[in-house]
Length: 487
Image 1 (cartoon, rainbow, N blue to C red):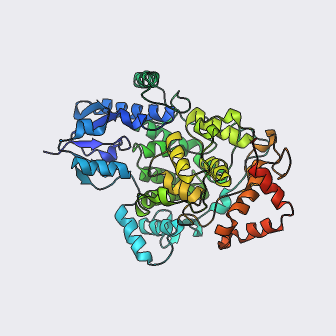
Image 2 (cartoon, rainbow, N blue to C red; image 1 turned 30 degrees about the horizontal axis):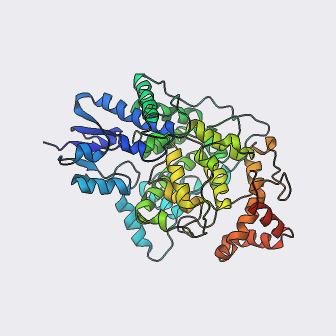
Image 3 (cartoon, helix red, strand yellow; image 1 turned 180 degrees about the vertical axis):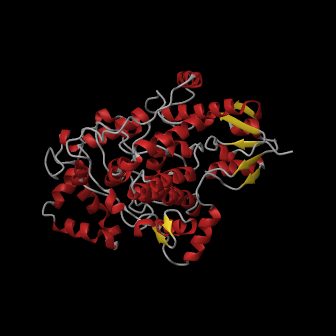
């Protein structure tokens, strides 16, 4: 007789269920020990309760303060969970541990590849190419489809000029039910009793919380957004929150969709002639490449990776506007808009995370550990394994180049080119000095001035640093940003 299988809240899809008895636990401490976004808390509880309802008598659905309260002393099996903390819990419980699921590649795949690299630097692009070749995904024999593994050059278009949106149909949103309504009442009670503190707004639910909803969201993306994803994946518009993005990170991170299903769906669209190769390759690279890469790096870099990483000596605490998701208190239109959207939905697309929120934090020297926690808590798709490599490595260059080859810093000109944010802003992206000097433009040069001693050996930063040394007003810009109070 099979052991009952305890499933975590990110293991809710059919690929985590082999047909035996299931245990699901709603542990209040998970939501009360950190300031989660209210929409994220609602989504987690809704997904758990919907899964319990679907499983019926086959599931034992328990409520407790802590997992240990109801699992200690029981014979269990688990699928290896996705965080250090959860793995320590599983070890403490003495559960039978099955191999990880929910990713395209296994930990053994990555370990074999990493060991085969020897002293060579580990690069995501190299791992992605090896996996494409090994699996035959978008390959014609030994050669990549279209003659290249990467079509990023085609996928950097600014938004259409004078457009309010991309003109795509509204993205799929689920219809809430009585389970969602009860979750909302329970969250109200937790807040009223002081048992939890949430960020942002909640409702209506915008993201899939069931397997059926996840499959509908996938179909909707392939049909309505996939073709435009490649060209406009780095573009932003004030009037179009989703643009051509899928938002499928949410159901994938809940375990409702297997990432291979998404890859298979977009590749099938290409093979039918329904989607262009650059868009399809971009999705495959984000999932088989980047998503799997940060998962493997989470384990490879170690449990103390975030704590030990502060290569650029960033010491500033996160400001109130971030901690309270208060975009209304921010003058810079891009930052105000993105913070407001995070507060409203718990989600913005990747370029707004990297080149607005992350870029700002990098320039201002916010603590990378605090920023990692903030991204994990404030985003509906935030998870302990997701954010370390994304924030510490990619966004903040706090690991000194283990994940990314250079700091992802840019001035207001980049934001102006790739969005319509600057047209309604009181700051001028072309100016670095004065009352209307853009804090991103001036902040970029002040950032380079601050970190120059640490990055001058980085070949990819040679040109920006040469520009810094030519600035006749360098000292004035640095002084202005050091004393800036309005942004």
